[in-house]
Amino acid sequence: MTTDHGYPAVRMHIAGEWCQGGSGRTAPVLDPATEEEIGRVPLATPADLDRALDAAARGFGTWRDTPVARRTAVLHAAADLLTERAGAVGRIMTLEQGKPLAEAAGEARRVADTLRWHADDARRAYGRIIPSAPGTLLSVRREPIGPVAAFVPWNFPAGGPMRKISAALAAGCSIVVKASEETPATAMELVRCFADAGLPDGVLNLVFGEPAEVSARLIASPVTRLIAFTGSVPVGKLLAAEAGKVMKPSLMELGGHAPVIVCADADPVTAARRAARAKFANAGQVCTSPSRFLVHESLAEEFTAAFVAAAEAVVVGDGLAEGTTMGPLANERRLAAMERLVADAVARGAKVRTGGERLDRPGYFFPPTVLTGVPADAELMREEPFGPLAPIVPFTDLDEALATANALPYGLAAYGFTESAATAERLAGALEAGILSINHCGGSVHEAPSGGVKDSGYGREGGPEALDAYLITKRVSHLLAS
Ligand code: NAD
Image (cartoon, rainbow, N blue to C red; front, top):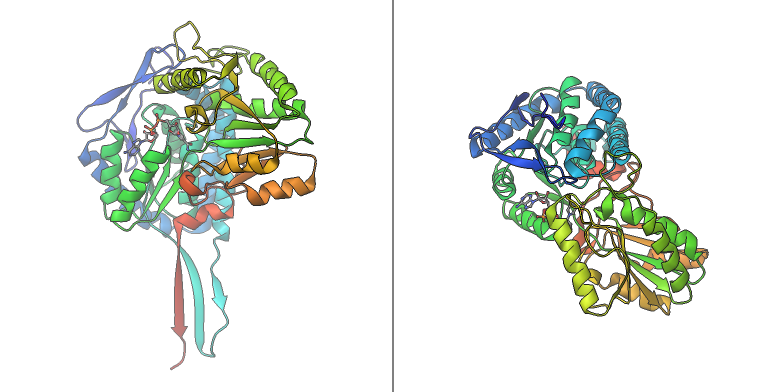
């Protein structure tokens, strides 16, 4: 069933059933390109959440005891369904989140591949046998931790849920996912792929609700064994503290404010083009988005001119319209934040080189914006912008740039541009970040771990490390002969 907008009727998925919340309470889902209501998302009651927990407890028993070859086959089947449906899923994502259709369908296809990667890795969750005394078998086993409670945001409506679902299911865990109430239908379509692929009931449950109510109940429940969160630093700290109170481990993938250091020996035009492409992807609403551009003073003018040209070449519009390369911001909060950050920077002496004001049309449109002369105490230099703002700041020597880069409590991504292998190694050693890219600003890949240091969180997603949080390590020493 779909609405007039071609948007599906959103349902939760609990114990293998598609359902409304028990109270009938719903919240609106808006199209950020028009600000129109395109659907309603059901909100869970405490009783709905308890049913989801109960289902996850039973689902865990079933899934843990399913042969790994069968588990892998189900996950591959779900990935194949998602690949087939990527165009339709992408359209739903564009309607509810705003990103251009090609970007949205690309995200759906990419996360199908993430699922395949994790499905294969499930077969390699090896333990080990340790040399020991004769008659003794000393082993280390890796076992699924148990039911997981996951909370994911709206910026990657497919990528956010899939990173957690794929790692949890590959490890043999069950999961209750609270996806964003602002982008619920993409999450629903992902879950549909698993259900259609034959995933047993209760292994994957999807709920929506009042975020604080949902997280409090899921975290406190004795059923839940791991808390996995992607979102802002303040909410991450809150959930990690709640998990700590009940002695549960957590995986925290939080925000960043990624520095880009353009060294004196770099090609400023290439660096500007690559950095701008990454900056304006998903309208800057990416936790690893490059967001502080520290450019050697000898290159600053050339870099700025090339960056402004790249920003002005971006085609801002409705994500469903042909030719759009950047959609609206996902919600009104981001638009207000862009206006506040630009006004603060300008009040402190910054100059807007392009963009700077919301577009005069319905929808949460804010253009690619480049600022120079932004002082270090401007909010934009301290607070994650999570939007299409690019402050460019010149530096004189590399030590100064590294000190600026490391000065914030964030430590997620960092970028460097240099022709020198020695300088690249210096950046690699000195930058306080979990992810460093040299001479490019490419995104995450499922083969390699992503995650932060400092306030940007802990634990890793992607790579073989992705399963670590979802597995416990058990030592078994077995005296064979007495
Ligand atoms: P927010 O802090 O209100 O919410 C972030 C996410 O956490 C949302 O999905 C929200 O539903 C969820 N959330 C909020 N309170 C919660 C609670 N008590 N329990 C469980 N979940 C809860 O911020 P927002 O306005 O949605 O997004 C703005 C900021 O969030 C950005 O500035 C950015 O820093 C951060 N963010 C980061 C990522 C990321 O990938 N790390 C993604 C989205 C947003």
